Image 1: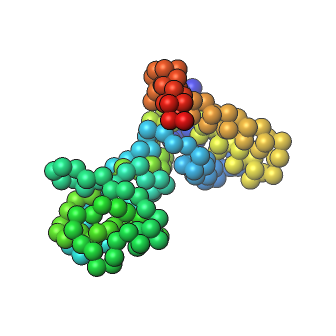
Image 2 (image 1 turned 90 degrees about the horizontal axis):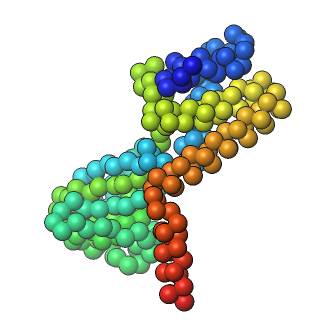
Image 3 (image 1 turned 30 degrees about the vertical axis):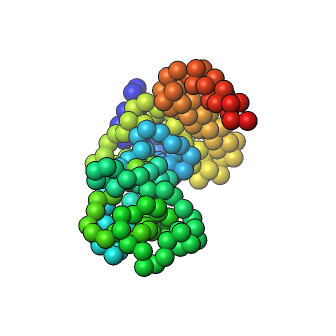
Length: 212
């Protein structure tokens, strides 16, 4: 059977477990698998864009709730300004708390982005970041990752199921299958991102040599 939807995934997990007393637990096993996927994978599906309004004199902006890694922070103006990341201490050393103008740098403080100089007018910032894969549910029945790589969800959920059942042997078996599936997806992502893989690797190597 195909495994392209939340319902089909739940059915597949139940078939592999071959027992009917865990039906209510299966969505939890899927959620645990999604947690591992979000922590351990970095796919195109997880690359997202968010915009935030910067108000005059306010140096803090809330981060997207599912943010795991920032790719870039830009100001949507002409010309576009790409902000440079600095550590919190570096940001305070580089710019005084009274500085204002067009922001040039940012740092991360808790659940917020701290920007300096403080904006001197209302601006729009664009945040490109790595976030979570959208969670599967009865209302969100599928994701690109599920369609392309159902084995990741299946093996991750089965690992959680057998861990719950204290079945160490099967838990280890499906944990290894899950990790192998992760590696396969990472390779596939790398190959699709760098279609000229060998040429790119050679170019990077030559560039390193030229800098020595």
